[in-house]
Image (cartoon, rainbow, N blue to C red):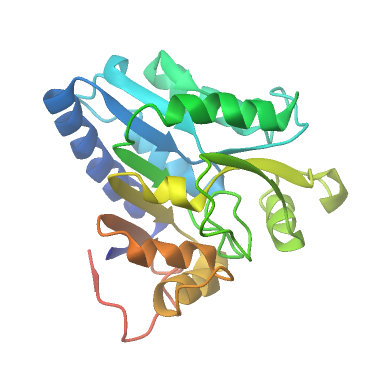
Amino acid sequence: MQIKIFDDKNSLGRAAAEHAARTLRKIVQEQNCARIIAATGASQFEFLDALTTAPGIDWSFVEMFHLDEYVGLPVTHPASFRKYLLERLINKTRIKNYHLLNGEGDPNAAARQVGNELSASLVDVAFVGIGENGHLAFNDPPADFHIESPYIVVELDEACRRQQVNEGWFATIADVPTRAISMTVQQILKAKEIIAVVPDTRKAQAVKSCLEGEISPMSPASILQRHSNTTIYLDKNSASLLGSKVTASS
């Protein structure tokens, strides 16, 4: 695991996007197809803005999978992750081969359907974030580190739901769905490469727990310590609580 720290979330987003763009260009050139997992949320704004305008990526050779989605939320809702990806990634790049999680119907059926597509081949690179409670995708603590299914339906804890309110996606915590479809921890770890984009002071405690603490289901993103090809992109705010145990480069 490599950690890179930048002055602010804009320079962090640009650097992570340059890394991701290099990776995608190389994979497309070598394989004629790049399979990716895309994260959502406020932490990914700057990264996706830079990635979608990066030169030299032939997005027609990119296949995209959805990391997570709320159960029962229509695609027209401002907090819908399908809406987010359509507006911030798919429509901008004109990706044609993408798989979105529809949580409006039977969430278990949606999880199985997209999971079958995902399991057909290895994922080349996963773009992820880390939640304020340390979650990875919507795997809140205590996360299941062992289940092998590509996607599961999970219950969202209060800290996770409150984060969504604080970021402005919902007016009150009562408006936040209590369940979501989430890619599993084991499925995320199967990606050949992981790029984690984690800015802002509100993520500092989770960053410290997940990168300096023991690997534990109570700090779900701590499992990234076990992945040999993971790069964590932080800004000075999200890295502010890290101590001498962590060696960073930028």
